[in-house]
Image (cartoon, rainbow, N blue to C red; front, side, top):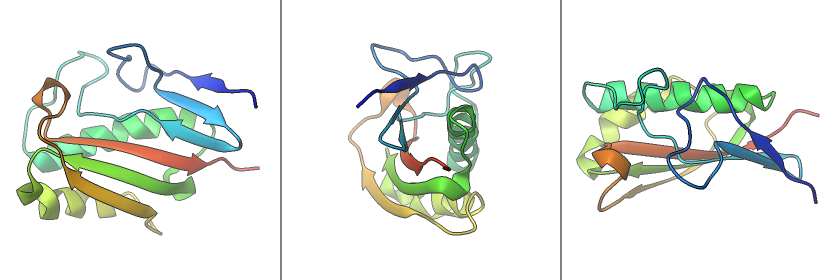
Length: 127
């Protein structure tokens, strides 16, 4: 099965040996996105709501570069530095979907660059 690399300047460049997204078998698998501003390479200022919104805009860039939208997302995994941020993250998360995908949310001991949230997605590509 061939794999296609997805790369866009609408999301932060990879910080290591990985890609922003990989298309395989009719699905897009995104790398975990943190609240890095792609223009500056720095974490956005603000609370968990602001960080979650930046993560979604980064994910939007990757998903759109593959020819899909948030309505095509079938699964997401949310990593929180503090599960106490769940309600505030969830309030922002809900605004990005008409039909929410399956989701797992876990608390991680520490996220890259001490971000408060990281999200990855699996997206079924339109035919």
